[in-house]
Length: 173
Image (cartoon, rainbow, N blue to C red; front, top):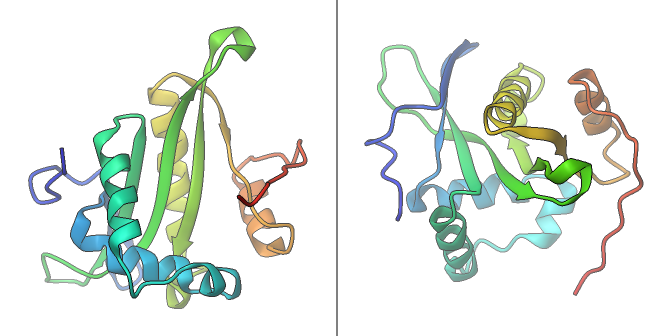
């Protein structure tokens, strides 16, 4: 069920410095840009390998086929243009649970904005849209993890109302 980004309306549009920021469902053609964004920091550079796109394509197909998962990209459309480059991305997943009276929660991950555009409010626009979409889908909570070393990211999420209430743990398999 691959979504055709041209066939769906944007999820959100916002005026930002440099043009219009347009949030939309990702398409398979966006994968190189998404991987580039994920690799564009010291942690991601060691994890992401854009040469072999097959693992990313398999992951995209699984995400795209499941309505409980959204892979979203943000384009920056220059004034007077109809299209622009992918400059941001995130994944939003909706998870059912038994706890909290059987409530749903959302999880946001892989939040990235192109380095040259950080600090201009694009991340704020994206995460606020994700919060609103989570509420619209009936979620009672939104969660995320961020590496302990990412202190600027911690401040960013706290400004949006997130609380560092839990200690997350991971096991690499």
